[in-house]
Image (cartoon, helix red, strand yellow):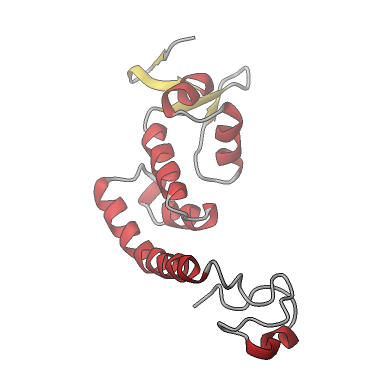
Length: 153
């Protein structure tokens, strides 16, 4: 099925299949995004979903944010800052990505730290190592309970 011609001109309203094909996500992902409040659709009299064409940019925004490690909750919060749930613009992306920059920098530092210590350290505690000469001599942090201790800054 091709794009649906609805009031507002050709391609103004898309079926779920059209959106899935054009956005590169599955229909089930679209349904999930909708349940999570990330995108919105209207329903036909036959209860079929219809999307405004602008949803494609919103999905691109969601997918890009996910690729850089932003959680769906943070993406939903960010999209919620847009007036009348409109489609994000380049200015919106610049503003929101600046907010996420500090978190990304923190994660980059964590990964660099992990890469440097990967051979000798696995987070002190995550496998109940008796001694970690790097950060946990005499298993001092093992008394704090199970799990890694040095993954966060």
